[in-house]
Structure formats: structure tokens, C-alpha cells
Length: 253
Ligand code: 13P
Image 1 (tube, rainbow, N blue to C red):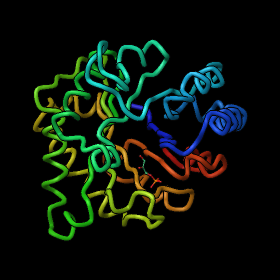
Image 2: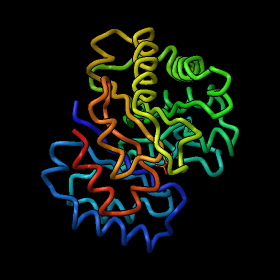
Image 3: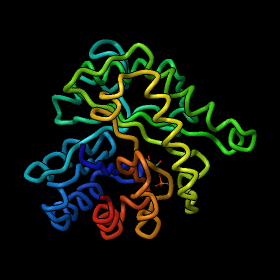
Image 4: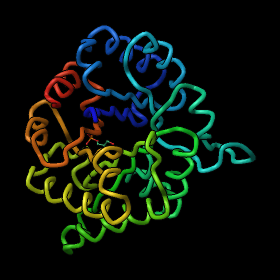
């Protein structure tokens, strides 16, 4: 599987700034990088179609930052997996810690969303990660296993379906401090083991990528690239800075 680099713009850019950033990316990210890796842009919903239009001649993928678990109906404010697929999105971030924290998303909701995404042909980017408090109480491994298992139990991946699991230690996100790569390595192994409890080995190896997110920048990215099970990055702040984002893409091998 190709490495995947996912830009999570969060709620940082209005449509003018989104347009500007997308235009710069289209101009500056070398096609050769886009051919050998997957680069996915997740703008805010209000800018999605605009960004899709700007990137359509290029090899970027498009994702949303959240979806709802039903395809259609009276669900005010929900983003339908089916409709976002029609809008050209092939990825959806699901269970980001900011949504778990501010919108009280539960593991059950994350599970429903993951299932709905796959059913609509959208690859889930499932986020798991421990808070600082959980880490201090030595609960990291339990949290990672429990979040992965609750999200994915009962889900089968067909040969043409993919899944991305993003390890995002909540306390590192947006902090500017980087995680010791040996800690990311440990988390990758725990997640890989949890996945092996859920899926056959060939599915884990061929259809699932485990990626890292949390204050990744142009300086620390290279420290994660060689880790066992490393499948790519989920990037917040640094994805808003074109040169730094390109530098991370180039370093991702
Ligand atoms: P930062 O890269 O800004 O720490 O954000 C990480 C993240 O939450 C990506 O989803």
C-alpha cells in the first residue's frame, strides 16, 4: 500500500483561505509525489466543493472531517456518507479526539460512522489516542485497544475496501511538542495487535494502514517514517503551511 499523508484543515480556514491554500498546493506539490503516495485534503464542509474543483485536475484525494451514520433523512446538520461520496470524497476522518471531546462522540457513534462510511465506499480514517490523564494512569494500551475494538468489532473489510487507523495522542495534538518515536512505535504495535484480533492477517497487512498524527512538522516527520507498521501521517497545523506540508510529503517513504 502507498503511504498516505492526510491534511486535516480542521475549522481553520474560510472559503477564501481554503481556495488560496488549495491553489498553492495544486501549483506546488510535485506530481511525482502525488503519484507515489496518497495525499488527502480534508477541508471544512463549507469549502469542500470549491477545493474539489481546484484539485480536480491533480492527483489529490479528498476527505471530510466527519460524517453521519445514515445516508439520508431527517438528521439536521449531518453529512451523509453517500452524498459526500457523490461530491468526490473517498475518505472521512472519524472519531477525532476533538469531536470526542467537544461533541461527546462515543465509541458506539464512531462504530456506526465507520460502518456507514465503508458501506458508502468511503475509507474511514479512524482516530484513536489517549489523553494525558489516561497516559499518566498507565492506561494508554487499554485505551488504544478498546477504542479500536469498539469501533471495528463486527466489521468486515472486503478485498477492495480500506481502512486507516490514526494514532493521535490527544495531549500531543496542537501542542507543538513532538512525541518520542519509540512511544509511537509502541502504540503502532498495540494497534496492530488489536487489528489482528479483528481481521485476518492478510487484511491487516493489505487493507489497513496505521498512521501517526500529533504536532507532526517538517523537522520531526523523518523520525516516524522508519517505524514498523508506519503507513503515513495525519497532519493538522503543518498542513496549513504549504512548504512545510510539501516537506513532510517528501519525507514520507
Ligand atoms: P496537529 O498536527 O496540529 O497537532 O493536529 C493533529 C491532528 O489532530 C490531525 O488530525
